[in-house]
Image 1 (cartoon, one colour):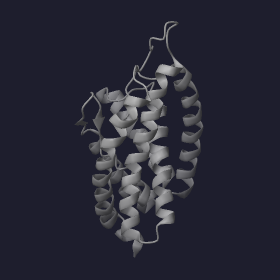
Image 2 (cartoon, helix red, strand yellow):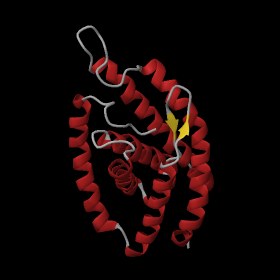
Image 3 (cartoon, helix red, strand yellow):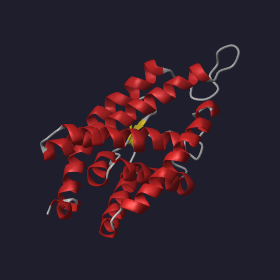
Length: 210
């Protein structure tokens, strides 16, 4: 689901790096002040799980792929800031070591998937009073909201950057294609993400609930 290099116009990449840079600095400062030492191993395990999940791409019609993201799992265990930072690290490692995603697309991926998904998942957790259903819905929404955001960003590129005769300079397809191609499969992928969130929360979150 996350975006590779060459798909995003500089008009998006540059301000996205500015916004993400401020949020990365803020998040690291918050993490340094609030993360308890005993939570570090669980955060490392959850980040590794998210990294492994992101390596599995499910091919979809039209050349797109779907991923179980682990966003809801991370948000349920650690909150939106840690989710944003952990997913940013996952995207950076994948871009540098595997060529998956990209450096120019890094802030957009981090903002759409890590921050957007993390905030949406935390919102569900705050609104739904029943814990297990809330964690499941957080996993589902943590997959669907990033898919919507990525689809909107990609579909915006032909309108934003094109030649004088209207030929797209970067990603060539508009919202009529990106929204159904990316969002609809993630409505189902979100179910798997929700189940994963519940399973991992029951294991890694057990100590917090005691």
